[in-house]
Length: 220
Image: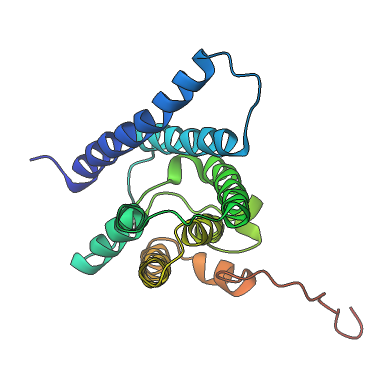
């Protein structure tokens, strides 16, 4: 019988291939016209396509799982937390305000490019589901325990601003709550799988970096 990790991998590969292709086709048509001006929207679309392609590659090459969160809630939170923003975009029209759109594009670009960096650092440990593959504690993961979710949060803020409405704010709030649940579910399975996770969690904050300087104790 095919196991859950294999089926999940196939589903993610299919979804990311469709999304990356839908983003790459407009880029191909744009550059085929020998456009001399590269707009902020094109750069943002290019970054989004690279991010989707990197997710595809990391999913194909990911390490085998050492532990997976049990129950339906972690799976629902993972899937809904990943694709909720797409539902929100399909239900809300874009805001007709140039300044808001430029600001939104900047947030989306910052969120996407920083997500690419975090995903590259996470490497073959990447998974949409709450799964323990390898404990990554260096690079951006030495600053906060869930840097990828922080970066994706900046992206979502850009999407909320771009399609600003009461419905978009509500769906965006749901998105943030789902991402928080995903983070908690991941921490649960990481603690079960890696004994050293507790020490890592005491040393590194969950979502918000510590900017205060640590003052040595007397005599140290």
